[in-house]
Image (cartoon, rainbow, N blue to C red; front, side):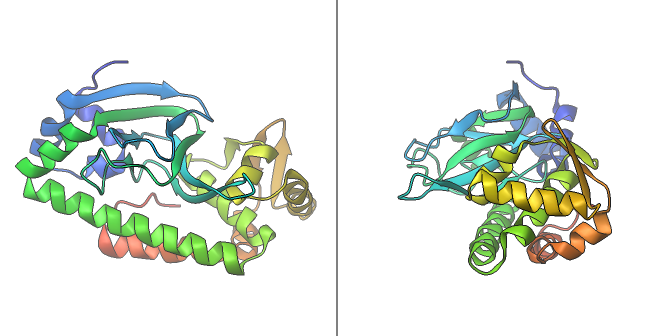
Length: 243
């Protein structure tokens, strides 16, 4: 754990767009963590005392447990966003568990310190309020996606989302991890991945996915990601990571 230099905050695009004054306001309260996949940032029911900002290719997801003890991802958060006390005033129970999906560097700030900074800066408060609107839109769209789109469409969507946030067409992810993100059994995912691989859209090797034909994979996916990107671009122009 270490304290980042103010310029290191630019590795998260939500923070990169802040004014120099607001980044300087936050930087002394930030700490750097290198976290592995599956690390839990917060458990459902925990008090939200921390806020996390993924940097670079790091990703985390909000997931909700069903009565059948199956976890379903409702939002994937990369360098464009944050996890934790962004919306609330903190110290309230978290509804969803937040877990690292793609390991890497995360910045952490105590939610109490973030709340004080938001009180000191109206611009900071408004910026994070805009982000909370975008995050809520992502959750809404994911709910609709889970209800109406096929496992194949959703698998293609999540693979493209992971590729865009990891800044490349090659990224580490197991069939088990993708199944967890979709909230389905591994056997369903394996059949879908086999079809995508046989069609030449992707390649897999020992926990690594490689996008071979992005255009065809986009056609195989639902349009939910595009709708969310459009909303991000409208509300927070320049924040959402480009393809």
